[in-house]
Image (cartoon, rainbow, N blue to C red; front, side, top):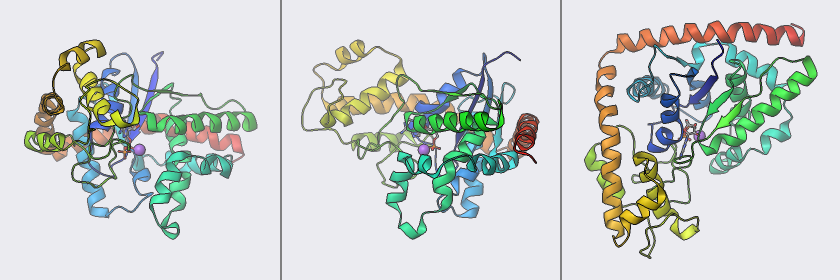
Length: 330
Ligand code: ADP
Ligand code: NA
C-alpha cells in the first residue's frame, strides 16, 4: 500500500504511566486510520535490566490488554510481541557489526541507566539495545516512529546505522523519522519534576499509572512537587518545572490553548491546579479502565489478537531479514 508506515515499541518492564500514554500511545491511536501501523511490545528490550520471569510474562499480557483498551484496534493495526518474531534478534546481530562502539557509548539513556547500576551488573544488552531498536524499526521499512522525546537520540542512531549499512552493502533500508508530539512529549515525575516519568522509577508518588483509581490519582496529584511561588504559568524556568508539568498535562488532555489555560487559572492557587489536573486525568482514564476490564477477563481473545499480530509482523520482517542476510553474504 501507499500508506505511511509506522512502527513504535513499548517495554513491558512495568506499568504504563501517563507519560507513555501522552508521549506515545495516544499518537499511535490517533494515526490508526490513515497509516499502516506496527506496534511492538518489546520484551527483548525489557530484559536489558533484571526482570522476574513470571512477572515479565504477566506484565507483557497486561500491557497488551491495556494497549487495546487505549484504543489500539487490531483490525486496523498490527499489535505483536517482539520475541514472537525472530527476525528482530537475528537482524540486530548483523546491524551491531556495522555499529561503532563509540556511537553506543554516546547514548544519553545508556549513560543515565548504567550510572544507576553497579558497573559489574550493567549488561552488554543495555549498551547494545539501541541496535536492537534499529532492527525493530528498519525491518518494517517504517517511515515514522511516534515516540516521546527521550527516544529522539535513538531514532537518529537508527538512521545512522541504516545509512552506514546502505553505504556498505547497497540500498537496503529506508531512513525513518521520529514523530514527537507538541504537548506531552516529556511528562516529568510528580515527585521530582527534574526527571522524566518512567516505569523504572519506584517512588510511591512518582507517576500516575493508567489503571490507578481516582483516589490514588488525587493523592498523587495532591503531593505533586511544585515551588514556593504562586504563578500558574507555562515556563521553562527550572524552578517552575513542577507547575509547568501540571499545565502541560492539562494542555495535552484538554486540547485548550496555553492562553486559555493561563487565563483559567489566573488568581487560583496550586491546590486548585492540582485538583483540576487530577480530575482531567481521571476522566481521560475512565473509558480506558472500563475497556481494560473486558480484555483482562478474556485471555483467549488476547492470545488470538497477539497470534494474528505476530503472523502479520513476520510476513513483513522475515523477507526483509532474508534480504539483509543476502546482502552481507550469507
Ligand atoms: P519507560 O521509559 O517509562 O520505560 P518505554 O521506554 O517503554 O517507557 O517507552 C515507551 C514510549 O513512551 C516511548 O515512545 C517513550 O518515548 C515514551 N515515554 C516514556 N516516558 C515518557 C515520558 N515521561 N513522557 C513522554 N513520553 C514518554
Ligand atoms: Na524509555
